[in-house]
Length: 372
Image 1 (spheres, rainbow, N blue to C red):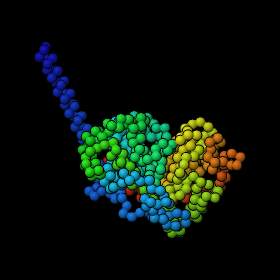
Image 2: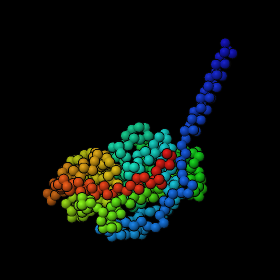
Image 3: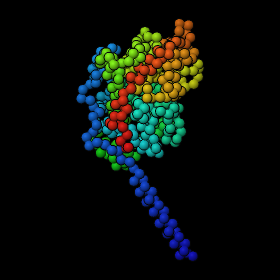
């Protein structure tokens, strides 16, 4: 009996060992390696992009531009190798606690790096509480998130990684060692920073470089502004006037101004009478850019609106009374503004918003998932 017991114990041990080896082999074979070009993509532009303001005035900007402030970090200059590393980190599920969720899981390129779902799915398959914002032209922003709680990009990039619902890596000090064990990171860090050392700061810096490289400035609007909008349709021209003119009936430019069609502050836009998510306080939220807006549905901080038609109708007739309602959306008697747009005007606004889609940005390989 003792010999038989010993035999079964030995057999069990061998089976467990075999099973463990099999699991290790499965994990090794399941490890996805990033597919990167032999020569890094060009993330650093050799010449500043040309942008158009108003009716065809061309502006060339650089890091000293007063037209579009460029909030670069002198301690973290953009390099091709740094942005390449940032791209891999952005799409790598190993930045989450259980290796399931990456930044790219919630920021989808073909949707303007927004999430087509109302709320994103976190690492434990739980839903987040706000809609994931689109990403573009982060180098020109001075605050981040719907509630503008992050003022620097190097700080912003790790907040979703740490978030208990999103990626769950609450102990960031564990992350460098985790990445060090992956075969593709030492060489990438060496190329980006001059040594294979992986630190939390270098992870932050690489992600921030990648986001700063993500410029979306080649829409139909940008191309047509250089020709005086010669190829705009009559409806698009009407929409241009309604959206961009400060004194227009639509009043869009009072919040969505400038080349990026965004805002410098937060606003309460009358989504509720009182209560609900208070955002940055008093129901105020960041004014997002309108660039690529046609592909970034659903809209608002909670993804409540599925279409641009819904959004336009909210501003047209749906603004709710609120003691904290932004002044731009009030009448003189403090009642909510009603734009009273007709159907043609509403269609014109949407036609113009569609000209802000940058198709190249939505398909550019240098911003795509390197693990696919």
